[in-house]
Length: 171
Picture 1 (tube, rainbow, N blue to C red):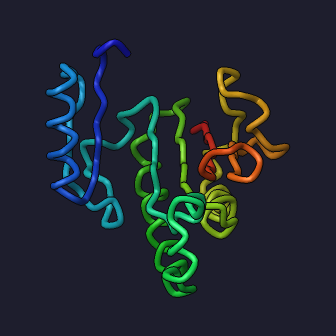
Picture 2 (cartoon, one colour):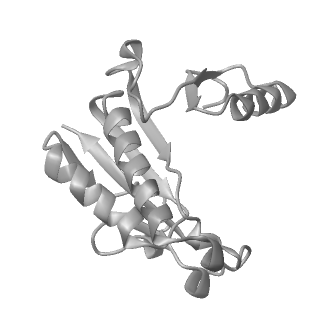
């Protein structure tokens, strides 16, 4: 973007927003605006239908980082996944209202669990007929796109952390 346009970063944690502001200043970036907001509680009214692209880096179990964080397999419990699913569903539903018609909504996690990934997307699409799954841009390595048009990386195949992403278009 070459510091043109506006990037709005929303997080419920004010310390994360402060760290982002400091990093932007360090890098000489002026196009980033931060908002402290709990997207589980809803989207601020003035942000509805405002964005061409919305990226959700959803809170998740982190199972895609097991190689670097093996303690996850002993720490994470089913009740944790259930709580995360509730957060993921709320954040996705509330954030979707920020997308302009014709805009894109990108949902991503560093989880390998279908319950945190395609199940969340499929549930959202069932309830939100004005969104549809679309292919990720051709600039993304097509070997990382599965037959359902989801972006995936696997540690044992790609020698990197496991990630998931879905690109949705608001019709």
